[in-house]
Length: 113
Length: 115
Image 1 (tube, rainbow over the protein chains, first blue to last red):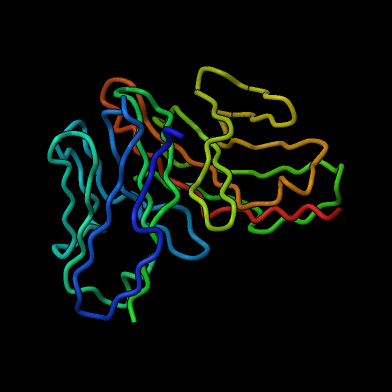
Image 2 (tube, each protein chain N blue to C red):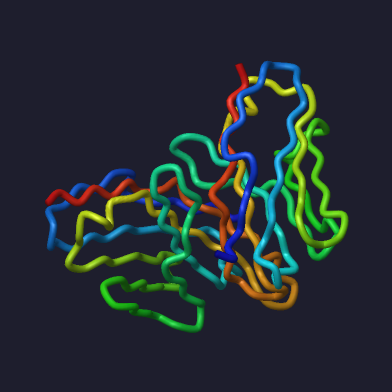
């Protein structure tokens, strides 16, 4: 299957710890997006990359969040000093340049205790 | 920024009935409207989309309609089946020159199809 993959699928961490998630997009897709989804809500945009360049960041993305896509392929999202409010599903999506259709991965569910 | 409202939040139907989910958007510059289906424990799956130069689009049992003047769009599912049970999200975005391609999502509709 050549869809979007995300790892890990689940992460439980204690408040104050750092966590890192990985997203592998569909191979020929040069745009990669990160979203956060909480219970009963639709996905909320966090940031996106075109190739290795991070082009836009939402104001939801606090200084504790950082994302990278060093070689324009996979991406990582790191959350430093996690807080209970960071508990959510973190979704990754990819698309072709200047195409509207985005394809989502299965998400990483983060629980901060 | 864009604001997308989605109704109803929950929709319960009998197998074989039709289901309609409605969304409104606020930014008249939005021109691309996808619909996603999300099953429990999975990421959203794109099921159909419509662009602002089209009023209606069909794909087998699902159809979308768009009213640009009123800034609302709808998802119609006919002959519902239990496997249609999921959360459905509408979204709106701006594509093309100057567009961000970043969708704003509605809050979702939980569709329950009873056998």
